[in-house]
Image: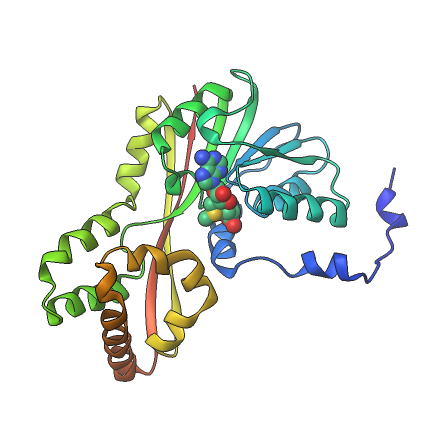
Length: 276
Ligand SMILES: C[S@@+](CC[C@H](N)C(=O)[O-])C[C@H]1O[C@@H](n2cnc3c(N)ncnc32)[C@H](O)[C@@H]1O
């Protein structure tokens, strides 16, 4: 009882290494998730694609110990990090399972709430994952996800398309279009929920802007290199990469010079549904 009264902050390197780690990108979507997700007591919760522990560990703490939370992710090093946070924060109601949401290691009708921040819609087989979520949820159970939508970084992709044309590569525009369309919109994602049998679909769309001084700052940003650059390089032939990207960067810088910054739009959505 009142265990928190015994808490003593220990300023160790191990603790601090997990204190300030939260990608701003994930946080932007996480804020949308927590804005719309209704909390309740005594839940068995699953976070799909929990990565380094978000939103799993925040949710476990906000729900408190009447609920038990599990994170499911195949990424070994991210799971290690999540476990380190569980130890450092003293969380007793969360644990990590290494595995894929294509094959959720829980019995039918055993989970009350599934969440996924920037997860399911990025997976290779989202339809299989939606079906698995439906299987493991109890009747009345909820699946709530946040995702970026088709149209994110639109200003960047417009310059990318112009640069393809400018460099005589208009034939590659269809690669760019399918890359952009790979990301769903609210309607197509709602349809994935319905196809899996879900009903009572709740949708909240929103957007935010990310400003960079210019294209050079954007392309050199750690998160852009980590999360996006490989997929953009794959849109053009290997032997053109070294000549194409400097022109793209210059065009982004010209756009930024017009208004003082490169301002990019990120549309996003919270979508939640129930198994009835
Ligand atoms: C964009 S990250 C989001 C991580 C975290 N939820 C966040 O908000 O920062 C997507 C995560 O999904 C995981 N993932 C990819 N395929 C998966 C699958 N089939 N089942 C479960 N997780 C998967 C990745 O390993 C990664 O941790």
